[in-house]
Amino acid sequence: MDLRRDMVQMLLIEDESDIGECRRKGVVFAKQIGFNDVENGEVAIMITELVSNVIKHGGGKGVFLMCRIKDKIFGTGLEFWCCDYGKGFKNIDQAMKDGYTNSTSLGIGLGAIFRFSDEFVINPEKSNDLNELFSERRNDFTTCLLTRKWLQKSKWNGLNKNLLIGVSSRSKPGEQINGDTYVITHLSDKVTVAAVVDGLGHGKEANLASQLAKERLLANSEKSVDEMIQLVHQTLRGTRGATIGIIRIDTGNNTLIFSGIGNIEGQIYSKPKKTNLMSYGGIVGHNIRTPRSFEFDFYNGDNVCLYSDGIISRWQYDEIDWLQDPQKNAEYIVNKYSRISDDATVLIIRYIT
Figure 1 (spheres, helix red, strand yellow):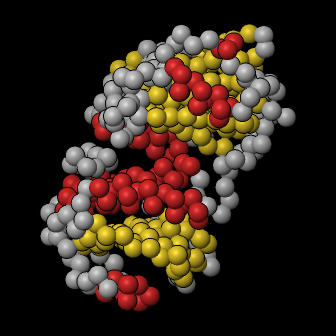
Figure 2 (cartoon, rainbow, N blue to C red; figure 1 turned 90 degrees about the horizontal axis):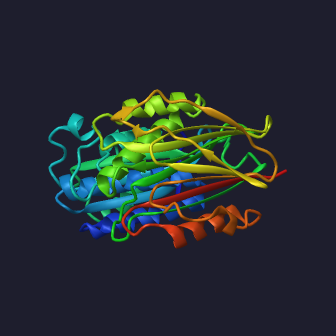
């Protein structure tokens, strides 16, 4: 591999507050390089787990290094080094399992880093071009984790130009971790899959469930919406569980297919009517009926809105100007109608020509 590095940044890890600091700077760094919102969410999880493991396994001190990498074959990407002076992992197999956590971790374990990475190495040889930088801090690290993530050369995200998308999501006031999440992935220039996922309750356990669901949805987005729910159901066994609403929009055929379990609510707004999207009862990962999918017409000017139960149901669709930017409408609904006792997410998609 003919690897070149630039934009190198090194951050000290000294206490738990550095978890958030490294995550924030790492996500900004990823955006600068060109990663999309979904990939930036994955980067945030990777950094949180990497730095949390320094706090837990590395004696609470270490360094986090990030840089842009370029290769003739793989193109452009991110490289993270996370090194510490601790005793290392007593059981690396256990650390790789989801749910192996402490109070500072998301609880997804090193397994999440492995899944979100294109390359993941424990205690690699240090690169010659980084030796000088490492030696400035001390070069007697006992454990180093290296991970790389490459930009996709062909990106579907944003390619469906017939859709305007807006999303607003926030955690329960007082919580640092959001138990809700959302998925947007463009399978082609005509077909888009989107979802809202609400991990049961709020906080770390809810976040674990929703992030595992998101991983499975992204990995299987070409399947039918009801098949995706079945796959997520299998994945979430043993977790707190979640509620899910999934839509598949085909602007070539003017159709929208929906499947949902639990209290994710949704409507299609097509002047002059509103059509409700019906979910079956249950908790994904625990007890659900066999999921079913429902097909609707979806034409130019139509809007679809999905939202978690952190949004109160008494808001009126006719108070929204559906010709306005979906992002502004999503933020308006969250700001005005979200519950203070729960996470809240609103996803709006409008079909334009």
